[in-house]
Length: 65
Image: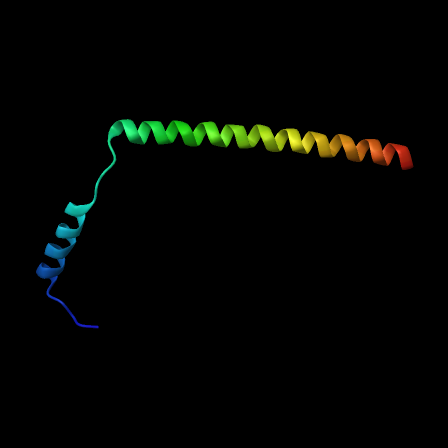
C-alpha cells in the first residue's frame, strides 16, 4: 500500500464527500416516521403472536395437566 501525502488525502476525501447526495430534511423526517410506524406494527404483531402462543400452551397444558 502506497503512503500518500496527507494534504492529497484530505483533497481526495473532500472530493468524495462532495459527490454524496445528502437527504433533504423532509426525506429524513419521512423515513424516521416510517421506521417508527414499522417498529410499532412489528411490536403489535409479535405481542399478538406471543399472546396466541401463550393462550394455546395454557389451554394445552390445562387439558393434559
